[in-house]
Amino acid sequence: MMRLTPDQSSHVRRTPLVDFTFDGTGVSGHDGESLAVALMRAGHLHLRDAPEDGGARGLFCCMGLCQECVVRIDGMVVESCRSTVAQGLAVTSLRRQS
Image (cartoon, rainbow, N blue to C red; front, side):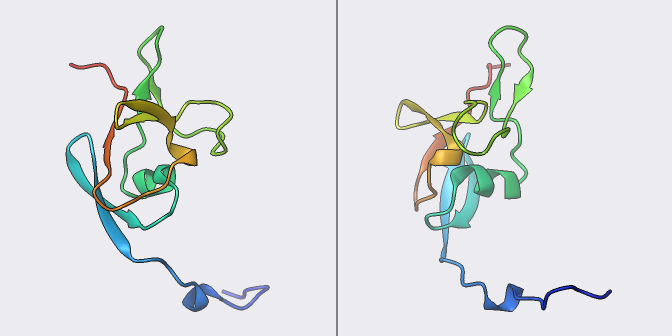
């Protein structure tokens, strides 16, 4: 496959991986990266339930405007796209209990 620009992926420097939890399950992400990105990479796309119909909600705008990606950290509801991953962080979805 021909590329228009040279492959620069080997030059990307990533921060160290850190461990955190999402709904009690262990997840890894790069220290300081967006929580939304780390959750998406780990396959966690359903972050909350819609209040009216209970439909699955997750990432949408990825810049903090829509509030579709909200989660709970330390008892506070925050946008996962505007929160960063850190070692030992405990994140909880806003999904209805089954």
